[in-house]
Length: 160
Image 1 (cartoon, one colour):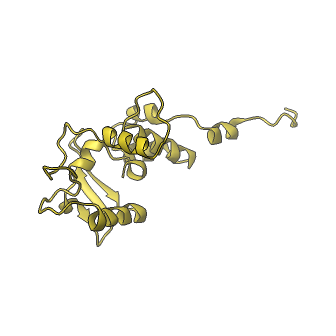
Image 2 (cartoon, rainbow, N blue to C red; image 1 turned 120 degrees about the vertical axis):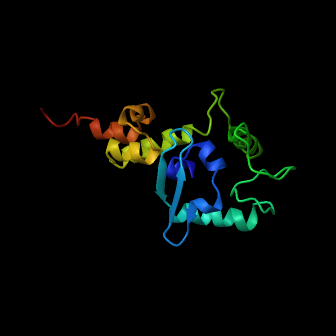
Image 3 (spheres, helix red, strand yellow; image 1 turned 90 degrees about the vertical axis):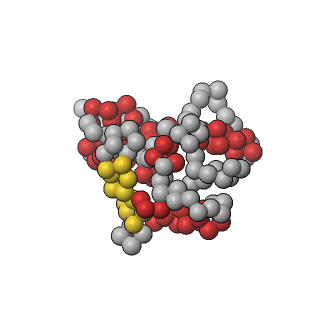
């Protein structure tokens, strides 16, 4: 949900079953930062990942929140729970090298923005996907990549 839809951590933590329209394949919710209602496509891989979590990973609970803490007390994540800590734990277990730079879940929004830029999506579309009210906020999320830089490279064999 972070890398494919660009959701903020707080919005993922607050998702309820009501936010999902499985018949029409979309997720709809009010963004925590802007209070704007946003509707995003429920991409096939995201949908299957959520189904897998619900069937095999979600603790038993009557809670309407989709994502729950796995340690007692079994309840929704609070706004103060930082998903970054969980990611770091599993990176250590998987023996993935962790740089000294603190990288949070929000960095995945940057990754999505850059990926969309590499796919030649217009900045207005990227801003829309990230839920920005103005495209003025979007350039901060756009990073250069080798793929984009290679498109700018000049061929030294070609005479100007």
